[in-house]
Image (tube, rainbow, N blue to C red; front, side, top):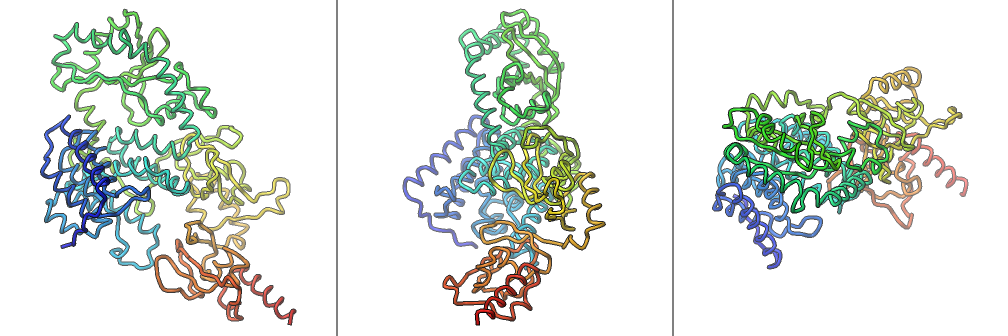
Length: 607
């Protein structure tokens, strides 16, 4: 049995955690009778297991699983899933075993927690696995495990966990934020959409938009808030639209009282507005010009009808539509459409003031599926049919359709969904593609790798060593590995044609990282010492020791690097340690040989 840590939280920290736990219970009581005994047991075990561990923000770690549980409580989940959410990190972070968790809480909760726990490096059976390999295995494990009968609820914990992580991610470097958002877009959101878990997807997509394109996100958020304020009295005032709807329903209580379950106005999510504008108006490079009520439905209206009602939800709505149309608001149906995300049908409404709405007429079952997806409402075969296929080489393999993206001057381009920065570079000009180095996205200053996948509305500035009009001075960076980075047929064709005549220049390369996580491409077969000269020609001459990945022991300088290795060097700052002639037999790259030969020639000449 794992020894639990003593709870050494400060009194104020413990009080803060207790208050959050009690608010979680209160949230659940709005919808059901929670199993308070089970939840208290899970809370106390998680509290002891995490002990005094802190998040990077400095707050007690226990606050994170409680926030994740509260997100799920607000959606309306029951006690066993909420308990598993409170416990969701104890296997991964606290050396608690799945067996121990099963003994304390039963197999259902233990299996759920195990399904969301990452693959541990020590259990892969392969000491050469890189972090990229481990992350890939964790994604495959998660997608596979959540199709099993007892693990299906783990999917919701994973989504809620990512929601809270993205909400609190601003303390991390921009590159890490973008990597987390990209993983969310490429792995979690597509899988969640296949499961029809659209309520949590809406939240995730807006959080990703804020990270990926902060300028657009804040323009939409600010513009939308302005529109809501301008329409506040007409909608929320004493004689506003909400009050009119309520009065209308009271007048027709006999018809609606037993059949209308829910009638609510909902504010829109920022990413939902962005997708709507991209779909309807295509070239929206300057988003703020479109933040007007003539372009944007201001509210979503849920008109939810009992499953016991004999007619369709629409038929009940149309019983009151004449009153709406004849009222002072002159509500009029102007069209019927489907959302881009969930393909849910809605009626487009517009009032006499030009304010637009999206009306969703649904049954209770349809609303439940929107909130919970087929993971809860479907049987196991139904769930597996939605997953369809997991590509174990590339779990985030996308479906193909066109997306709008922009050059830095604002001009519109369309690429296949799933296209990368490298596809974008080739689409501009094959020479720019061959010489591409990295890119900046959406006006930010963080360098993103050429294999970064693009999403609708991204503005891309490719940095390339192509010299327009002076191609003889181009510096190609293309390698055979680039075939893994391109997605579009056009880019593959351009790359293969260049390779046919320049294969001798396309030295196979791999990605290696410095101690800060910065990525560098280096020739396959390079040694640790070669990488030292990539980082610094001068400091490479004074390397003392090198450390690979998480190994505490120094690595030999002649060790051959593997894809994804992370290397940390220590140097002789006083430059007393100098290269040995044997180094020339260790290095493999042209750069390292040139630096060493130059050094030895200089040293010999001085003597």
